[in-house]
Length: 311
Image: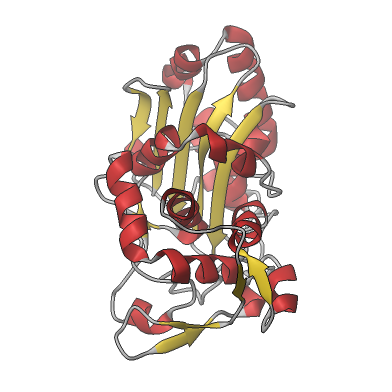
């Protein structure tokens, strides 16, 4: 399932596809945690203890974060010592640290994150458990997002948070599909079966717009960089000639041309029609399978799970 939502800042969507369909959130849930940290009355420069065990969303249970499923090793070197919430928030977004996320979430609480979703105007998205909370996952407690809600969240975020999101080191997915040098404040998330990215784009030659692309399907390998689904997200939302007008809604013709050419190169697909079939309800495009681009499952992931993944 591919879901897309693109909107000029402060406007109705310029383009949408399955944008209210829920997806398991992966690491896109970290944006709500970041916003909650900066909204509630916390001293972000006060040192807090870094631990690797947390209260589960299931009453009476505890869980541990798994370092093997984390893309950022640095916070793990500080387990048992202290760091500031500001530093942990930076690792959570810029390096997508799962451990830092769980520490930050333990200080802000789920109600504060739920309030962020409400303020952003989200309709379906929920942050209900920490990363690697297997007991909660097995009990059906999930973190869920939609493309529309992610775009609304990024449109709502205060400008003071754009800098940390623009520093994201994982320059794949939608960031890779933009013309070189385009500023984008974004967050991506991946694991086996999922690949999402959402953000605010600041083109040099066009107005600001928000974009969110969520993919759930068998060809998201879970690899942090060399994931076929990352190339899909890099292509953005252009599926055929009928959708070419999308980028004219959000940018100049030059920006649109650069975006389409770059996305096609990143995707390595035969034509735009390979992106979607049956109105976007099909699984991964056949061109990717035919070209043998799906790697064996493996590589470092943000929250990698077995093939029957429930994040």
